[in-house]
Length: 91
Image (tube, rainbow, N blue to C red; front, side, top):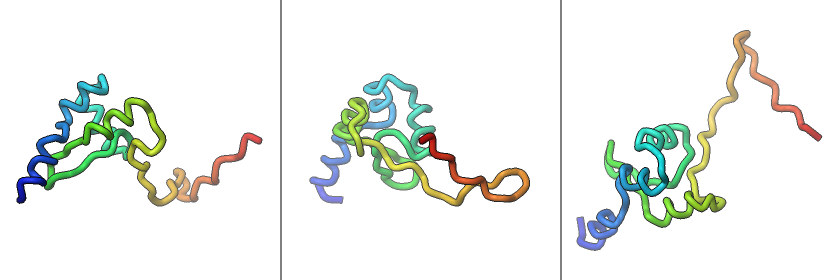
């Protein structure tokens, strides 16, 4: 690993540091990552997660595009096995 990359990684926030800046629990950040919401993060290896200071600050200001995209998957099925209909428009 080159020195420049090591410096970039060292400048990133740990989940504990990011949680402190956002005023939430570390467990909340973990849940947000699992749900696909929250500040953008980088996964370094299998378990190591880091946040850039800019991403955390942008998320705290609720800027559009500051968070990660929600997960996209198959439509959920109801108990009968049929797909749920799309939501009705309110207008």
